[in-house]
Length: 328
Image 1 (cartoon, rainbow, N blue to C red):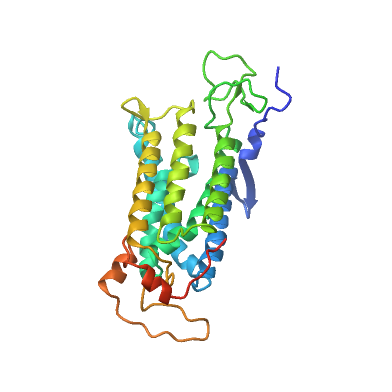
Image 2: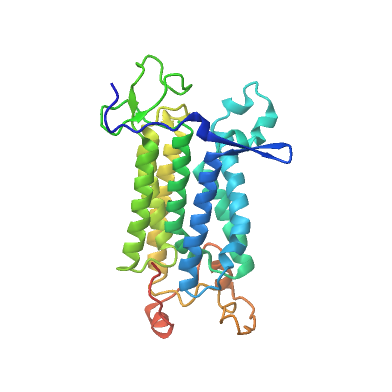
């Protein structure tokens, strides 16, 4: 008997939308639309936050041109490497590139996207940590939108549950665990992660109103929050995954994200005790749409700050810098 508040899985026909354009059949996957929606939301949120901090309107698009493609490539590479039997155990090797068949990993997109952001920030003059902080809540919102695609695909659910909000999965689903009765409900891990991610985005915004979360600290909170949640949700999923020392690879990756976030937070809080004077590297500030800014050579500390490190900012320098209130 289905629980009265159980979550039905969408009709399988909703997974792919078939369009006929001038005699060509185009298949649009709902999962891909959810990913695109997430990217769009992340760009809008990041642009709004970065512009409020003094960046040129539209500069986020220049950085996204590098971050988004490399993020997609990284997501695919990570998925293939963590599911080798699906691609290298007697399978056709060309399927490694068949991204339209599904198979992307968030941690791979973070690695590839970070490389793209480094390149984009280097070109535009935006500080890497300024962009990362502006991106943090938008990234969680984007990941929440992406998890909605897992619901349409009837995938990545948790173990059986008697809770009223259990997820309905058809018994003919290849991922349906053997030996369970038809009508068994499962933990909707996609929904848990959506709620967790949206709560994390709200938490970062609230914390920014109370404490200084610049110089990469907001992004550090993102890594800690997402890593903690993902390590739990990943551990209860029933889909097959590559194991290392008996633990799912993505659980290890989640723990690594938490550790990295803690390290970034502690190091950056020690190195930078004041607010950021500008989201731009020194000498490359944007002075408004009608102003002409004379470019100056970067110092070594500016160059480092545009990558991973930053020039040491003290309370004294912060006092002489223009202070901006944190963006919502």
